[in-house]
Amino acid sequence: MKSLSPLIVYKTAPAAMGYRALSEICGTRILNGNITLGDNLDQGIQKMGEAQPRIGFIGAGRMATALAAGLTTAKITAASEIIASDVLAEGRQRFSDTTGAAVTESNADVFAAAEIVFVAVKPQSLPSLLNEIQPYIKPQHLLISIAAGVAMETFLEVLGTDARLVRVMPNTPCLVGASASAFSLGGAATTEDGALVHRLLSAVGVAVEVPESLLDAVTGLSGSGPAYGYLMIEALSDGGVRMGLPRDIATTLAAQTLLGAAKMVLETGQHPGALKDAVTSPGGTTIAGLHALENGGFRGTVINAVEAATRRSQELGK
Ligand SMILES: NC(=O)C1=CN([C@@H]2O[C@H](COP(=O)(O)OP(=O)(O)OC[C@H]3O[C@@H](n4cnc5c(N)ncnc54)[C@H](OP(=O)(O)O)[C@@H]3O)[C@@H](O)[C@H]2O)C=CC1
Ligand SMILES: O=C(O)[C@@H]1CCC=N1
Image (cartoon, rainbow, N blue to C red):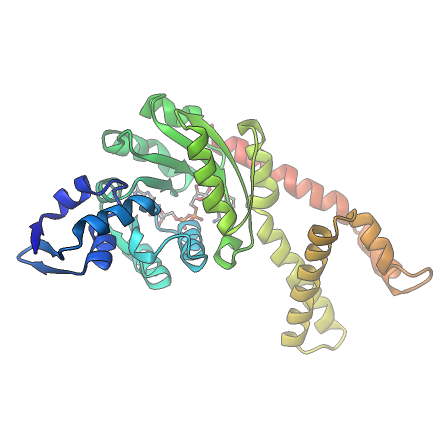
């Protein structure tokens, strides 16, 4: 048996996976604050080197929780390989209850334990946060900002252009493996970093790389978009209730109808207009409903929504 401090294990493990992962492989006991590892330490360290680096979240709010839960459900990483910090006790509690992962009050703990660090605080909290975390960022860290609107230039002004930085705009359906994300590489991020981010995001949905100049538009469309979808589902359900359907049946039919329409677009590759035409019989029910939507300015309203959210994203970065 060998006895090592947690720090030594971190330094020994090639991918800094953390001693909990190593302990799962080797079998350990904790004695007087030291970890006692089994004889198969070398084998354990080798397995850790082949595995996914540990993932940290600064800010354990709604988006971080959805991402962490989605990643563990997708089995891209284990809950034991995730750590999150938050200034709010209730945020930490919700994160650990939902994901089973470790939480801490200390942002420094996250950088000590993880190689991939998601910055998941609100854009307004970023200026002070960046100054706080600047000393913790080492060459082994890959930083992933999910903050709406905040350009990578703002990060790099504080952190230096040597920082490996990726900006991502995810959305909350990553919780159920159905997110739509876009990302851009910045700073000293490598193509391997881009491949890693693509792999993580693809595990919880669809991921595309775009120039950073398009990320505000992505925010206005898919970052905020789940809320537009929920509004549409709620409104459809209200319509069904108005026409006499029980609420639970109306909501199920509304949600499944939008899910089905989305799958038809993604899986048939047909234009949404052609799919709409296939539902619309001459003189039938659908054209009556579509006419009412067009009279209400449906398309213009949705376009305005994406434009307004994009403009707000641009403002948040200033
Ligand atoms: N929610 C969404 O659907 C999406 C959100 N995003 C982006 O993700 C980021 C997080 O959003 P969301 O999860 O909704 O926000 P939340 O407010 O739910 O989570 C952020 C958490 O970080 C905490 N926090 C603030 N400052 C610090 C700090 N210095 N150290 C540690 N924790 C801190 C906040 O506490 P406190 O409340 O006290 O500030 C809060 O608990 C935002 O930048 C947003 O633009 C991107 C895509 C979609
Ligand atoms: O509302 C917001 O600002 C965040 C960014 C995208 C979705 N939610």
